[in-house]
Structure formats: C-alpha cells, structure tokens
Amino acid sequence: MAKARTKSQAKSKAATGSKTRAAATNKSRPVSTNKGPLYLGEHDVQQLVSVTDAIAALELLFAAWPDAATVNLPRQRARIGKGSFNLMGAAWGAAEIFGLKAYYGAGGGRFHVVLYSSRDGSLKAMIEADHLGRMRTGAASGVATRLLANPEARTLGVIGAGRQALTQVAAVCAVRQIETVRVFARTAAHRETFAKQIERTLRVAARPATSAEAAIGDADVVVTITKSAEPVLRANWLKSGVHVNAAGANAAERREVDAETVLRATVRATDHLAQARIEAGEYRDLVAAGRLKWQDVVELGDILTEKAPGRRGPADITLFKSLGIALEDIAFADLIVRRAHEQGVGRPMP
Image (cartoon, rainbow, N blue to C red; front, side, top):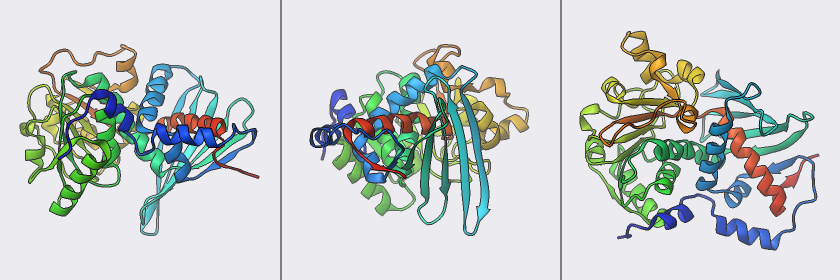
C-alpha cells in the first residue's frame, strides 16, 4: 500500500500534467516566434500545466478581481438533443484578456475555451478544455481548502469517483499534508478503482469506503463531486472543524449537501455570488425558505483579500460551494497560452 507522502511531494505530483514533462518539452522545443493565435489540444494542456499551476492562477485572479474591468457572465444553458449547450464568458481587466467557454454536455462532453486580448480584440487562442476544466475545478477547491481548512488537516473524505474527482484530490493534497483518503461511489468497483488510481497517481494512501458516512465520518476535509439532485452529504456525519468542498452540483436543480450542513457552517463561500443566485441550489433553497440571506454567503476572493472573515477557530465547520465560473477558465487559459508560447507548443491558427 502506498505510503503517505510529504507536502513537497504532494505539490510535485498533484497534477494531471507535470512540471517535469513541461521542463523536458522546453528543452526539446524552441521558444515560439509565432505571435498569432494558437490552437491547443488536450495533450498540449496536459503537458504544459498542473493542478498546482491552476491553484496559483486562481489565487492571483481572486486577489485582483475587485476592479470595474473584471466581469464574470454566469453560465447559460440551451437544451439541444440529449444534452445541453453551455456558454459562459468573462473579462479580466488586470490581465487584459477576455474570452468564453463553450461546451456540449452529452456523450462525454466537448469543451473549448476561446481567449482574446482586450488591448486590440485579437484572438489569442482556442483551447480544447476538458483537462483545463478538470484542473481549474480542482484548483477552486484547492484555494478554498488552503483558505478555510484547519492547517493540521490530514484526512480527506470524497463522495464521487467520476472524471472530475482525481483533480479534486490532487488539489487538496497540494495545499494540505493529506495522509489518508477515503472514497465512496455508488458501485464498489468504481470506488476500489478510484482508490487505486489515487495511490498510483498521487502516492497517497487511499481506501474505498462502504458508505458515504464511512468516507466522511473522521475526515478533516470533505469533497463532494457528484451531479446528484438530492443531498449525498448529511450534517450529522461531519465532525467538528471539518471543511467541505461541494464541487459537483452546478445547477439549480442539483444539491449535494443538506440544509443543516449549510446552516451549521460558520463560513459559507462560493466563487461568484451572482452565479450562485442562479445555480447554487443548496443556498437558493434556504434563502427562499427565509432561513438564510445572501449576505450570509461570501465570495472566495473576499476571504483571500481579507474583506470577509474566514475560519475563526479550529472547531468551525466551513463550506465552499463551487460553481465553476468563466473567469477561472480564462485566467487559467491565459497561463496555458503563455506557457505554450514559451515552450513552442501548439499549432498556429489561420
């Protein structure tokens, strides 16, 4: 069984794309002289950046967000066939970029980010964005965990073992010295396979749990990463001092945590309040019932810049409701494009 690793090892391994591969690529490729737009595929993204890179990009973004030239446009959905077309956009004033993310949510999904320069409106890149999205979603939980989890957190409980789950674990391990991960999924085969994948990829001890409660009961940090319409996490399972990342349900009809979890939390955070009013079912339900006010929910950026309080003490229960916003996508995309030019990666677009 894999042994628990050091914090530095966690940071070096916590990615679906490694810095080692990027460094090797840099030696074998010249710095790009192409200043025109690039097309970057999934493989390019994987070799250029890691989850830890995504965490750094999002921290920079959240710290610089409060300016008039930075705008996040909440996701729009249009039903098409058996899936839905999703469109979201943003502009980051300080970085002089704007762009959009578009994807079709059926058959495994097709994801693209298109990035522009706000200096002259020119196209900078089109990026295949499945891995980009997985890393940035994990990174948002990583930022929240760094800000809100107890520093001595060592145990992670995860509910969900789908395509987004590994980067969630990687991001939490990048910011806390996690020694044990317990995972639960609806089928035994999925949770056993995921536990082995964590050990193989991240070198952290991982165990499948026979129930969601067993995965969560002694966890210092919790991740829910499902598309459930009904809560998969109950407040009475949580121990004192836990931090919860509710990272999977990003539509009004979905909810991963029960009302009591929200009400027990001393900090209720999200990436963007305007988008939460549309998509955060767990918060919306309580506001509609008069049991919560939107003023009781804070943005992650306000905690980072100390405009809003974070954890007050070791016994607090803290909650981050992750939605996945376009501003996160374009901030990470900007880093990817800069790396691509530095390392000569990608194809020029006409």
